[in-house]
Length: 481
Image (tube, rainbow, N blue to C red):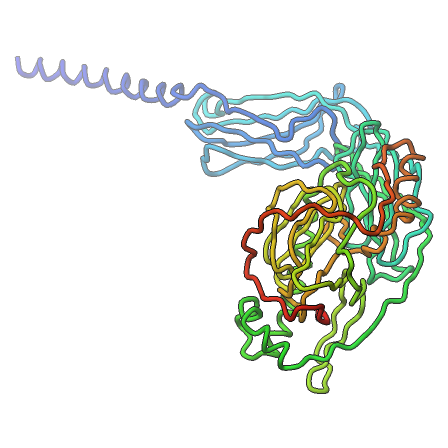
């Protein structure tokens, strides 16, 4: 009896074991029947070999095993990219470009396949496929110049108008390492203000019109502008212990690593100056796509000019030349703590302390053009505030690299300092900006010739300026920056 019972249990065991094994196998084989999810970025219908795509596959049960990208054109299949993975990560990305010469300017299908690491399909895994209809565009944009500057002075501004035959991702004028973006007007016309950097010779100044379309086809067009050289002033600044000692506390905050007054001065005049110039280029990217200004530009009234744009300065200390820098802007001196007016309508994009500039305000006038006001003792505006021409924005001072109370006034294009004298010249604006824009079919700001003495509005209540420095004396002192 016991023997018969034992035999029955054995038969049951032999029956159940295969059943369990088959059940486990079936569970492993069929537990994941979901295919990987596929996405493509960027997702676009017109493409070029310049575009880098990212195919993403996601499978949060079994992990992604492979991604394959192919192109189908009629009956022809061309491999583009493929990756097979050893580990089982849930999310995989495959970057690729569609560089298939046979496509030319034609339509095709892009197919992305992905498999997971499950045992579905008898070990082959679940597979998903996604297809995108696309057209290859290999034609660069066509740029047509409508009006370009009759001349551009070294250190000055040029203005060009042109059209493009297709939508642009980026366009403007490139000058060496600098790029000046253009701004499209409602009628399709592009307007671009660009600089002839003061430190380039007429031979080195080779402006180039650049257009990059939505699929990154590039067009380049040299601009044969009339280049006018300038001879900039050179002078020597004699440093004394009264000046560098009086600036010791302020300079120590900017160059804490320096161990004595002259080393602090040199660190601020060199390293801090370079960092400030780079910062201006960053700030200069914040510009409105339309012209905010109108009419003539104004500056500090009843002031004398103490230093000009692109003056080359050699700094001499105790009979030895210790540094050489270039002064960019106009130094204008009046009474101590004189009211500083906004040069024209615009939006404040910086109002804070910045190194050699001390207390600094930058106003954006739109389409790359900004004005700069530095060494202030007081700041009366805040970032983002809209101001009108002649509105009091602060008071002159001696903060930063300044040896006496004055205003350092500058003009910038996309953050690069250019000659402000042109923008203070109504005739130059008319000949080089408003008339050419109108002739090219664009809309230019109304140009109003203002009297020299402009009535200024009452100043707004002052707010405390960052790291203020007291004005030196009751009258104008010789600036140092």
